[in-house]
Length: 327
Image 1 (cartoon, rainbow, N blue to C red):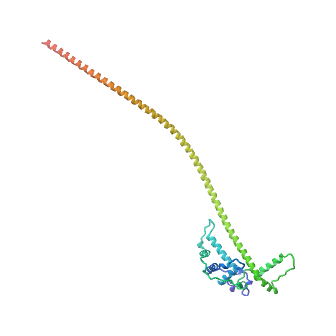
Image 2 (cartoon, rainbow, N blue to C red):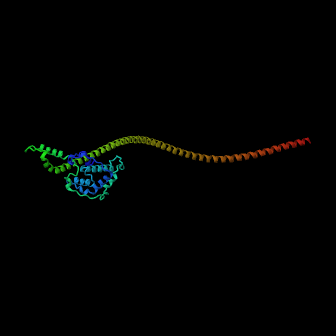
């Protein structure tokens, strides 16, 4: 929101709260914002109030010093870096989609140093810290009053101190206000940074805790599966042992049967040799008997032939005698 459009047209910047100013950068302004931050990173030297001066120089160059405070600019930059780191290097087990964030490529180019020199080099005007061109970071009178009241309450001895923020003494307070305000701004910025860092660390710890819980569940499931596999292996081992014992028994039986077969083979070999000898003896005997029978048959045939010749001779003689008698 532009200060000129604010409802409090008769007030000054110091009388407005930073919560009254909210501004959403356009895509072009975000691009210029990141390029200016990278090209002028030498301004963020870490010295006292260096960050405030650098951010104010960037906002003034972008003509946003009436719309944002340097604290808001710093917080926006830290939030963009935080989101970039979460998308660039997510915790293990988390799936992210960097392409869904339109500023991811811009921040990747910035973090990789590819945007250096793409924006003008700025200088910090120290006088800008004390003029009214910029939005207030915090309500200064309220902060200064709280600081003075805290200081007064912490004193245990010495003269009483009375501080009035109205009337004629306002001038004296305003003289000390810029330095005290800058110190408080720096402290508040450090507190905000610490809180953001703690939130980020807590978020990382929560994610790590979730990852550890999931890993523990996975380990438990794997352990259950491993136990089942071990039980299965034990059962298989016992089955193999039983099969091995069975095979050993069968092997022993086969060895006994083999020895029995060898003995039977030896007996068969001996029986065959006996049969061979008996066969040879029988063949010799058969040959002898065959010769004997042949001789006997021959002798019988010769005897039979002689007897036949005798009978024919006798019949012839009988017939011849009968013939003679008839004559």
